[in-house]
Length: 100
Image (cartoon, rainbow, N blue to C red; front, side, top):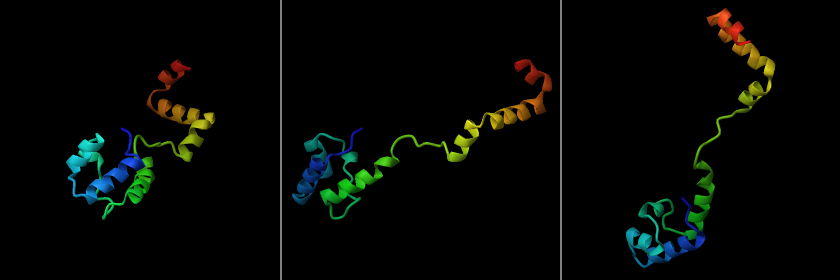
């Protein structure tokens, strides 16, 4: 879902100053009324709203959970093998040896 452009935010600001409703503005710029967040900036200023939206863009989507500690662990084959060995051997020594 693309965010609103700076020009669309300027249109929103102008139409709000003319007392248009959020639904009428959404219909005019062909987007969902939920895309128009007029309560984030009061009174609505297009340039401030656009800066806020750009700053919040990094919060969208899936976030990386790969920390430097996990990366170091995964890149060290001896530690990975030690962990697998310890977990498998504690459960069943013969099963682990069969996998080797």
